[in-house]
Length: 321
Image 1 (cartoon, rainbow, N blue to C red):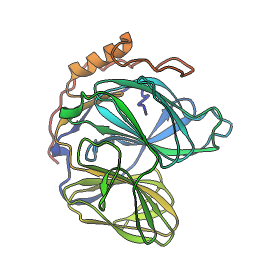
Image 2 (tube, rainbow, N blue to C red):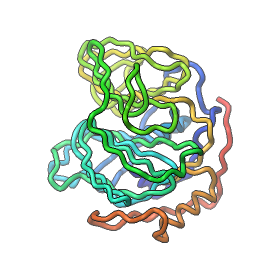
Image 3 (cartoon, rainbow, N blue to C red):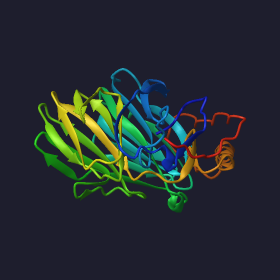
Image 4 (cartoon, one colour):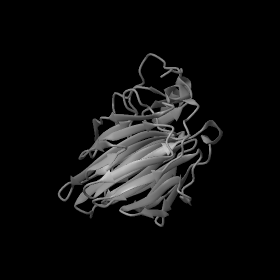
């Protein structure tokens, strides 16, 4: 789960001045980014004018890609700090390795949750023998200050809670929804859920009025609060709802992302989330010198080198919207 942008620019994230404290319908268009040799992703967060949704700080959607004659996802070892990564698949498989020694194949609708804490490195790749199609999402969750230096750890959950309604099957990825709770460790009030809609579904999903929400369209044709959402797009919804109307004329897949607005101001650069330019610079130096983040064993290739930091420091600052 990596940002491979060689022109990475620090972004100011968090702070409640960015939050829309009422219901809105703000459709976000993706930015297309190359991830490795054969995978192109649609980046929804961070987005121009919209940096976070709750603690969700980074969202990539990819596929469905036909990789029958391709290597598929190939992301060399790279570092993370100050965040959790969430791997979520609809089709295909991804092999996760990390500097803790974890080796795990993640399959559709299984949760791969890596908490970087103070420092970790990992790689992601399609297995040599892999399914024809690859389709999924890669997401980051920002860790609050009280937990951002925890010991790194990796969790893999194959049995996740499911909430059902006529025409809807909602698999809970992280946090809580309608009384169900994910086994994945969360450090802020948050929700992530995979919504599988059958053709003709017309449901109202219970949500928390104090959370801000967004919906990522994965597949099919659906309407969220009356707004058509096409695959690869995201609808930002703001706060203030108690239920979210969702309907579909055909089978469709959505991801519901939400959480309590993230109060702390952050700096996100490359694969790091910190609180100051100096902290980001120190993390980059540690990665380039080969210390702190550990070593990933078993990946067939070199690890990623960090891009150059821009010369002008960036400091967190609030914004009123």
